[in-house]
Length: 264
Image (cartoon, rainbow, N blue to C red; front, side, top):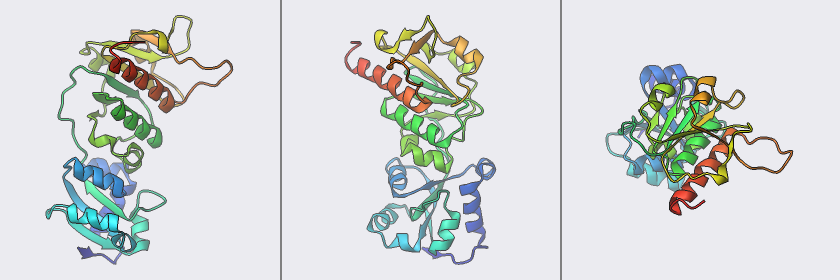
């Protein structure tokens, strides 16, 4: 392990840039994960790590020490004094360990199965939560339109809690063009007289779920592309759910039905 003590160290400067700048991540094709849980998940998934950075206090933690022993010899490891580690951390509460790696590219083409299409979801916490929910519900592909937050940014990775290594994620997708090749039903949520109750429809088939930005919802063309609009039943007078909660209800209702063989 190499000890770095100067804030002007070129490798440390690069780490800070990757942690804090979307432009740096795009230009270098690299990103940063934060925390022992994500590092463990990445190692379990066989992700090719380039570097691991540990704070001096983090080295003393058995959990982090064990993960360092699991890293292949090809992974460069660096230690930092706690103040420098805090400056390089992408989050307000540093975890003690960071890793640099290239985002995992989808190995599977857009075949059928259930899709989650996210349109201009910009909040990193919401996006990470949506990806985590999609992975847990067995979604086959997550498609992100231009305008979404960077799926592999450190804050989205942290909110995703390892979902990125379980779910093929396709960014900068022309959703209208992608849906031309989709063989299932396209469903969006919305409030209108013709909408169906989520709990009264059959979901035991392939579905492409459409969810839009926190404030604006789906773009008009995508909303019009839906084969069906559904509502989530709620008590009278209740405000609508946010996008993360709405997606979780829909995806797990479909998961329930598919496990039950189509029973509503």
